Structure formats: C-alpha cells, structure tokens
Amino acid sequence: MEGRYKNFKHWLEAVWAVIINGYPARKLKVIGVTGTDGKTTTCHLIYEMLKAAGKKVALVSTVAAYIGDEQIDTGFHVTTPDAKFLQLLIKRIVETGMEYLVLEVTSHGLDQHRVLGCNFMVGVVTNITHEHLDYHGSFAKYKATKMKLLRMAKHPIFRYAKTRIKVTNPALAGEYNKYNIGAAIAVAKIFNLQFSIIKKTIDNFAGVPGRMEEIKLGQPFRAIVDFAHTPNALEQVLKTLSAQRSAHKKLILAFGCAGLRDHTKRPMMGKIARKLADVVIVTAEDPRTEKLDDIYRQITAVGGEVFRVDDRQLAINKAVSLAKPGDIVVVTGKGHEKSMCFGTTEYPWSDREAVIKAIGKYAN
Image (cartoon, rainbow, N blue to C red; front, side, top):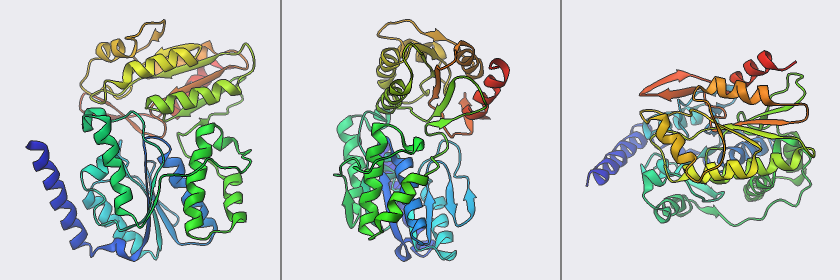
C-alpha cells in the first residue's frame, strides 16, 4: 500500500510539473533510451549523429545535460532527474530553440512517472539483464518496467543487429559497443540521416566520460576507468580488455558494489571478477549505511582469493603499484560520478582523479 501511495504521489507531481511548464515536450522530437547497460553510450552516439546532421538537439544523460554549448550537472547518482527538474529542463531546451531531445531513461524513472509527459517519438531498449532487483522485487517486474518506454513511443526499437560497419575507433571497442552503435544507427535511419554522417560520427566519437576511459600519462601500462556496475557490464568490460592484452600480461581490477542496492548481484560480480581478471582488489563503492564487512562477504561468497582494501584511493594505489609494463589496470563502478556516499553524506570523489594520483605516485 505504501508503495502504491508513493507512486501515486510521484504521478501527481509529474502531472503538475507537466501542466505548470506548459507540456514543453510536445514541441520536441524526443528519443528515449533505456536498458540495463549501454544507455549512456547509445544516447551520446544518437546525439552526436543528429548534431553532425545539423539538427538542433539537446541531451540529458547520466553524465550531464547538454543544451547547445551549455553543460548542466544533473546531480549525484542521478540518471533520470525527478519530474519537476526534468520538465523545467525540457522547457528550457524548447526556449533555446532545440527541436530534438535525446533522453536517457531508467527503470526508476519509468516506475516513478518521472518521464510522464515526455511525448516520446522514439523509444529504444538496449538490453535487459540483472540489476535493481532490490527495487523491483523480481526480474519479470524489472523487465516489464523497462518495456513501458516502448508502449509510450511512436517508434519502438528493441530488435536490431550489431553493426556491420568496421569500427576502428578505440573509444567504441568491444563487442557490446557494436550493439550500442546498432541501436544508434536504427534511430538515425528513422530520421533519414545520411550514411556518411553516421560513419563519420562513429569514426570521430570521442567516447563518454567514465566509459572505457583511458588515462594516459606516459605510464608503461594501460589504465582504464569504467562505470560497469552490473554483472553484464563488468563481464563485457573484462572480456574486452582481456582480449586486448598481450600474452603473459595481467589484467588488474579494482571494484566494489554499492550499499543499499541489489545484494543478489554481488556474488555474481565477484565470480565474474575472479574468472576474468588476474588480480582482484575489492574496495568501497558508495557503501552508504551498510557495513563493508557485509558487502565484502557477499562479493566473495563463492570463494577465491582477492585483496580487500577498504579505502578506494588506497585500493587504486595498490592496483597501480602491482602493474608491470604491458599490464592493464581497470577501475570499475564509479565511472563519471563525482561523489561517493558514506553513511548519508556525499563526499567529493573521482575515480579518474584517483587513478591519476596513483600513477603519479607509483608509475615511473
């Protein structure tokens, strides 16, 4: 009953936000992208393709909101903003003369009516794998929530092939990115974008902050930061990097699992880490009010040797200190995020800056 009341409250708030802002999305062509993994990269690819085609397009993603030359922070750990903030943002997008909006959509955003009134012209589902079962209760309910986007959109896209275009851009490495590109191309075709524009965008794509982002400071090993925080995402990242390393070189992973979130994925991620990485360091990742002992125990539930370093900076330091020439160090779970939550407080944090600091300390 309490859950129904909360959702009704969210619905009322969303309806009110749409009304007082004049239903701004009706003046835009809105492309919504949901899925467990790949949402952000797919959104940014669609945005860049439309932009390259000369369209007046805005983007609201996990990373930030982009309106023309302006970049707006959407908050800590937020993908789909609440309805009040989002409708104000859409109104602003319309007022600046934009005609298209690419919007990243989460299952929470769909369930809590945050995207009510977004008037989706196109809806995209990238994939649906294990995530957020703490919130939805079951995989079936999680999947049903994701599929709501397709019922809201005029053009649903959920069946598409991985791209057949030869991709040489390292920012789009990995088998999973071929599917992200395929989804973006499917959207581009709806808007009749020329193939030359699509191909040029893929070739020149600079990547997304915190998505397979490589830190290059002249060190003799590779250092990668990635947002992977689900079993599927972690597996895809580790498989991609494992295939890129030379023989007899190590893949060193530092990662954790967030507190007060889906507990069932923790042993799954621990198993994947030990199977695909040569060295595994488990550390803090937004523990919130949970004990690190409990999180660590669940990650390592199926056994296997891992290092435990609770302080995330020290964990990254250790990963870098163990790296030899030709090895690959990857830090996953936080990606682009700019804070980490301990207790109920958000503290400034950046995996990218932590890796840079570690390399400066240990790498010669």
